[in-house]
Each structure stands twice: as structure tokens, then as C-alpha cells.
Amino acid sequence: MAPAWLRPWLLRAWPVVAIIAVASCSTMQPVDVGSAMRGAPPPGVEFGSLVEVRTLDGVKDTFRVTEMNAGGLGGSSGFYWYDDMQSLEVQRPGQYDEDATAIILGVIGLAGLVWLVGNADSVRVCSGTPCGNPAP
Image 1 (spheres, rainbow, N blue to C red):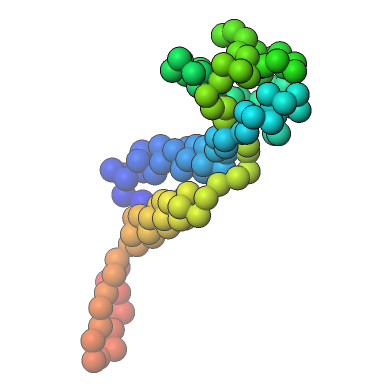
Image 2 (cartoon, rainbow, N blue to C red):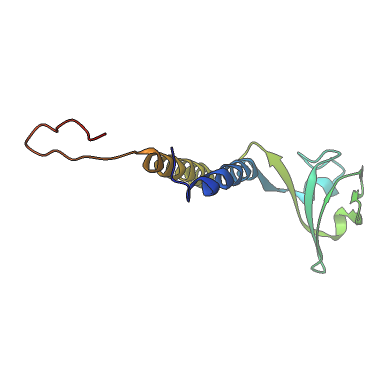
């Protein structure tokens, strides 16, 4: 059993680890605005997709796509024409890089180590001679 001072921390740590794991599994990926300007729908952008638009005049907006046509994309914050976009990024779940995996595994490993140390009742090191029976 973990020490009393460590239990609240452990209870709070697992949701944080889960949030990190879920958040790192979806990343914003750039979309070719040029293909969208030629009349083809932007690849990977669908109704309900979370997109980040940066316009030529420097405005940056993030929204869920509720309107899409040959001219642009729109959401709750307005409509943006492809001609006015400097960049377009879409959130694609399930694509993450190796760094995110290493961070997630490191956090899980650290949490496991903390759990092991917290659950160790006693540790005895017997060098050269057999250990006696543990004291009650």
C-alpha cells in the first residue's frame, strides 16, 4: 500500500497521464491550400473537423468546420476564403510522433516506479550472509 502522503498524488496523476496520452494522439497537420484553391476539397478536411486557419493579414482562428464549399471553409467564428488563407491545418487523430510516445511511456514508467516504491513495505539488503526472518 502506498504511504498516506502519496495516495492523493497517485489518484490525481492517472487522469493527467490519460489526458496526455489522448491529447498526443491527435496533432494538427498542414493542408495544401493550393489544391483547395483549384476547386478540389482540401484533403482530410471534413464537416466537424477541427481546423486552424491563418489568413494573409495574420489572423489566426481555430474552429470546427460547419460550412465547406469550393470557395472556403466556415465555422462558428466565420467563413474564410481559400484565396485569403496563408495556411490551413487540420487535426488528424491517431497520428503522433515518436517523441510523444517516448514521453507517454516515460510518464507511465515513472508512475509505475513511484507505485512500486510506495508499495514496498520494507527493503532488506543482505550481503554475504543469508537474511534472517523478518521481524513481526
